[in-house]
Image (cartoon, rainbow, N blue to C red; front, side, top):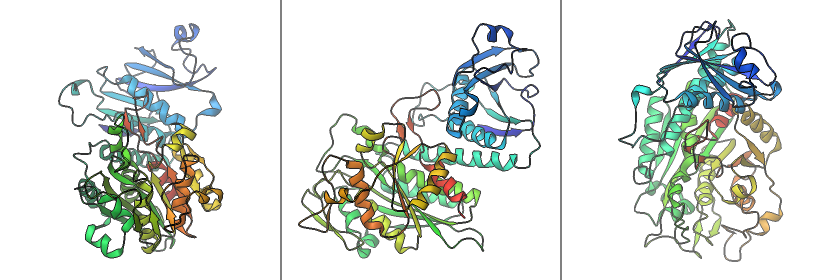
Length: 479
């Protein structure tokens, strides 16, 4: 699919279809479409789509009027959702070229990102049922403006959208194909194409370093683990800060000896979405070149109940030197993140953001509407939340009260890997905090947002790419 920027008005752009927007109570196209307005077919309600053929005054063969809701309510998240929904409405109709008419730089960035992301499908391995002749081939972002910032906004949206699809391509792979070593290969390909440094720690190197928490999770699988480090350095004269993006990448999670129920276990191929987002973010960061050094640190394992699997009651020694009693082998993500966070600090990361499909408890708390966010630094949180808002990825600040640590106190080791069922997302975050120290840190529990169980009007079933856009915007906003 080709994405283009054209400096034309909605009326003048030649395409098979042009997407325009109408707010509630608006009459922007009433002269051209009087019947549709008078009948109430076009009301401006959010995500209401009205397709009309051969509209007078438009060069395009069809006009899709997309209701944008109340004029003051169209934030980046809603705009991307609206444009994606419009493009998916036009899919499969034999329309080859679609134009999206927008009016500002911020809208151009959102439209470009949506133009790439909307048409993605999780059907790479399907051999039947595809009809390429009906696919949308070109999406033009049409803006009637000479603003010099338009080109940069378009490029930002295009780059982030492309990186999101890279992340989704990785995350949707079945676990028999995307093993930890296959993820390493995908990370190497991204790094090579983006001219980024990459280092991969194998099992022997991790054992020499003392990553007992990570290796304990991996020991039940025939697939060897790895720890991936990808580095971007900006031009000279930039800040000396180093932002570490730590992404959990359990390529399949059975739960280990504490095995999960069989129903829905196939979704545990998505337990590496945090790692995939960190890898994809580095692709975008390499193109957009923020003024801060960024590292992606991705621990990748498979959690299986093999004959050598760790057991409830085992005690492992982490890279930090802290000992951990394993009470539940299905609380494995926090174990691999503990060693990855410690290693990120050893590599010189001054600020850390980790992303993990970590707990079902966060889904109980927030549903699928937002990711849970935890921090040890309010100033860093403020910067992060501004970046997530600009990205259009909904995040909600969750507490880290001292009382949560009471649940993790242990008689036999320094800390145990789970607490009670109450406040499970908070105790998991508190466990990670023990390995962070004073380093400014954000933890994103994206278990409820990293994938869609069913297709939505604006997005296909499968991985969403969250929180890649927030990662990128955070790096771009660095001062």
